[in-house]
Figure 1 (cartoon, rainbow, N blue to C red):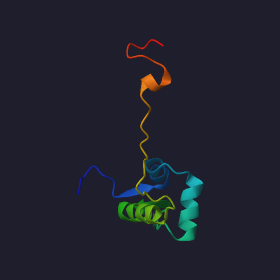
Figure 2 (spheres, rainbow, N blue to C red):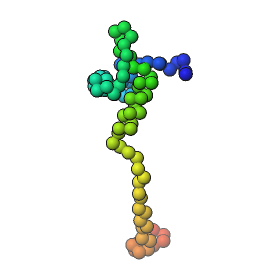
Figure 3 (cartoon, rainbow, N blue to C red):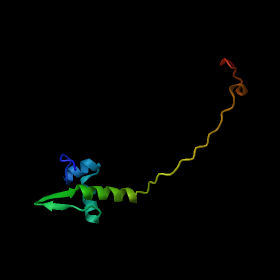
Figure 4 (cartoon, rainbow, N blue to C red):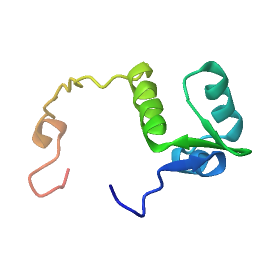
Length: 89
């Protein structure tokens, strides 16, 4: 554990770290996908809860990486296009 890494984020920091809006964070909390806790009046999200939320979001993401098939097409020789070896026509 790195002593300089926060163990919990306030809402503003969590939103900045994960590049989401404050309203989206509260929607995720309301939906039960993000688990906050309170320290007095301050709402905090533990680093573990934030990482679990991110992993769940990745797993639910419709974007799945799959191999891309590339078809290589050979170009005809330039001489068949009426262009000589020296680039003149």
